[in-house]
Image 1 (cartoon, rainbow, N blue to C red):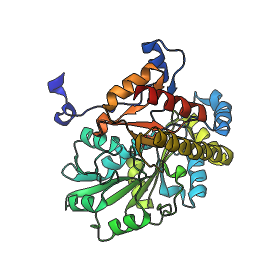
Image 2 (image 1 turned 90 degrees about the horizontal axis):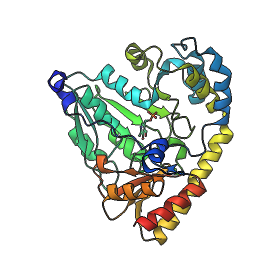
Image 3 (image 1 turned 45 degrees about the vertical axis):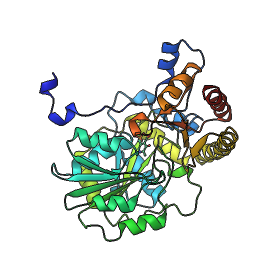
Image 4 (image 1 turned 90 degrees about the vertical axis):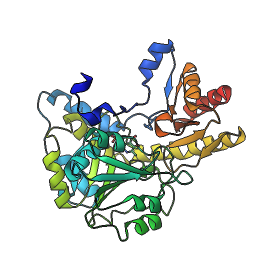
Length: 359
Ligand SMILES: Cc1ncc(COP(=O)(O)O)c(C=O)c1O
């Protein structure tokens, strides 16, 4: 059916997700496998979320609330905004799709960075929109170079902050400098999937550009441990949100996800435990990588980009044999690298043991 597909679809390379634990066990006949490949939360889901979802199980014969009334109301309180400033997605992946469909005309383009979250480019390709990418500079977004790519036909800019897969971030000063003097008809998306892990002072945490054409993206997939539920959050001005609501599918946030996400927001204990695990794990991994002479990019997120000094795909495959799933960086154009999610103490130790063996 090759010739029946839309032309741009023929050139799309599908997203390759982190390898699942079950698949690895089955294929390699392994009993014990750990996954540090998708920046998930190794502590499991928020216990409060699990309890809330259990209570809702008997109601799944009904469609979910198409407006996610209670979840939006809870999020509005959390972010000190109105429910009308919020659009929810089946993960932030879906919000990226909705944003492009809502705002980018067929002949307009999108600017982002090289070696960033792959879905910006993949979704744009599927929708037939041009994507312009500036190379990274010292593993960081090069905002001045991105600014130079913007022309009259640019409608959207995607900034992952912190960036996946590098773990680097754009500072408040750099962001403000970038936003200064941008064309008025341009929308900037700040994807903050990992902001809960930030432990630096110069990260732009506030939502102060909401009145400008800035869209903030958040997700329940990382710090709240709910990647399998698929809940992403877009925060933007009311006018923009009502436009995105026209594009959104009515039941995109399922009944269990709505209940789980509300409860997770109240689970401060779980969030604190998660942050502690990530910060302690990062300290351990930095020390051990340094001692082992393995280079890495310092990260403000819950993952680390590691320079293996050899073919990253080969390292990934070899580590799989020992039951450790990491992510090779071939699709991101970082050939010698792997990305490892910071897990529990036990998982981090197993990762280091296997990495040293493989290198
Ligand atoms: C920067 C970034 N944005 C968005 C996502 C997607 O998150 P979600 O699970 O909410 O679709 C990821 C997931 O890895 C990510 O790294």
